[in-house]
Image 1 (cartoon, rainbow, N blue to C red):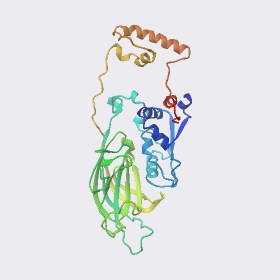
Image 2: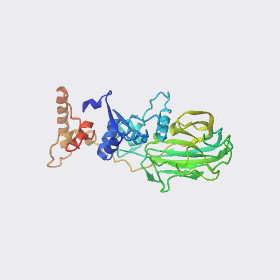
Image 3: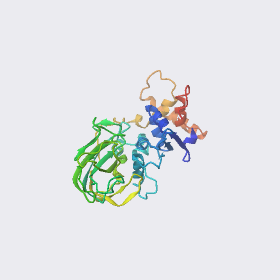
Image 4: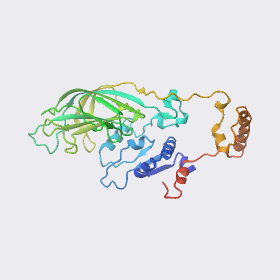
Length: 367
């Protein structure tokens, strides 16, 4: 559909519809290719009656430009969204997409864009966080006046990778990640400091965390700090047993290195006036994971021959032509191309939407 390939057109899909389309590898590839040049919006399912939100990383990694969220719920998806757009130079709501999501992989080269055989190669990301101290941590409203505050800090690393083992790795503190060792979307790598008993004004943690991740989307890595208060002063709280005291989420690529005072926010997304975390952040350069070498490019006449044009115009192939036949055929194709250009017709271009519709002509339309 030509209308979908204009600057003022946008596809608007529900999250369930988008996820169902991505189950088909061919359609998923066409979605990603479409979103490299044209617009798409995804909105929450109508069944989210509690105003919950989907994970925006599911859609950002497919190149979706606009992910609609319920702003009245300040949970992880909203925190990631806020961190994403707080990383812009002007912080006005526009962020440049990662390079691998802006241009077709066909235009990339393996040497300059980290692509091998048409696939984006993974990067190894390493960084460390020295959790030094905190200042004037907030007290829960339901905590008695004479009850102590027993804080500990939880650091989580989020990525746009599918769940899998050996995706993320960490050292330092207590490992609180999933027991099966898998990490990725919906399962971050998580580590915790020790519990500091009866000291919430300026507790000293002095713990170092070293984190590592292997991902195809290094610009879609986020780090979240969460402040908790142990109920008994010795053990970590059970999952869902209590609400966090404060949080701070940041995009890793936008985190400055060195000693930093990190602001803290409450469960409504409002910043505390005096509560902060004092950390030291170190980031190492990305390391490309070595993959298989790209196929050798043929030289000679076949190198510049428009093979895609031949495939589109050939109805059947009875015998394999010899290499010397290509020079005469190349000239004939140039004549055909010139004739098509003068008549206002070009080589047929296969649109995005009609292809998806044709796959389900016998059943319900996919869009």
